[in-house]
Picture 1 (spheres, rainbow, N blue to C red):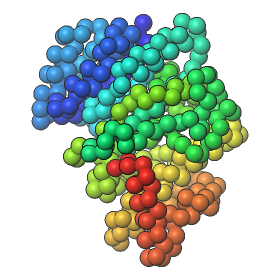
Picture 2 (cartoon, rainbow, N blue to C red; picture 1 turned 45 degrees about the vertical axis):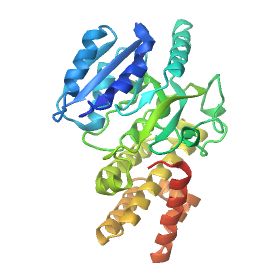
Picture 3 (cartoon, one colour; picture 1 turned 180 degrees about the horizontal axis):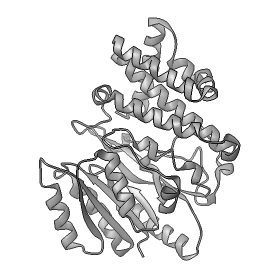
Picture 4 (tube, rainbow, N blue to C red; picture 1 turned 90 degrees about the vertical axis):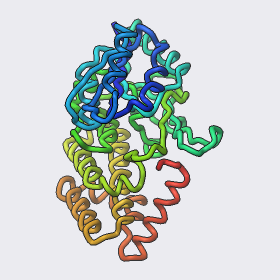
Length: 342
């Protein structure tokens, strides 16, 4: 039995995928590494994946599919996985091997003792090009979550101070299946859906305060660059709307007060981020899309619309007039500089 399945979506990743794969191999037979070639056509990604599979049978599987985008590749990884737990690592990122081995040991303990933990969380590093190692931002969850113990949503300390991202997450695979998660194909930024939709199915969690994931930022053409976000703004809007639909279908009382507050806060963050990019674009077309997005929220879930617009962040990002827009973008720039996220 595999303890952990790790999917690595690859699209023309020959130049850098090896570092990601090599960081996982020391876990040996406890891990299943699924290299998902998403229709690469410009390099030998699939050949590299098959070479690794031949060298490490029973540990690495090379999977080829027609191009379906990042979401489609993650979907394929989930459907092919056989491990008790599942993690996604993008091909230009990598894992801290020593932390990975400690986490594998932790997961094995859960399985052996039949301790049902739905979500395991660890820290990650914004590994930005040109930033010295000691200055790279480590995204820790210590302000929000208990460390080193199994806990539930009622034990979360500060619900809205920090946000869980795909890089933090190791799901019990059954949780993903139970949630009905199916990411949209050919859509950037769907990692936010991955970190959001399964949460109502998560009852128990465990947080290890160590940086497992190295999130590489600075490669040319990355979707997190500001230029790419503006170019792909329709895809970001699509993600916002899907997350709106997910939240609108929830029964707040069934979620419980802390999970409900967290999901609403995450949705607020998404709307504010998209608002910032559209305001930076600043054309009439961008502003029209901005109005349409907020109208979608108002129509789909009027109560969520009222709460998001009435929040500090939502109110700041939707200040009226040219001066208000300038102030909104200024606030975004401050957060961008603080966290170095693109």
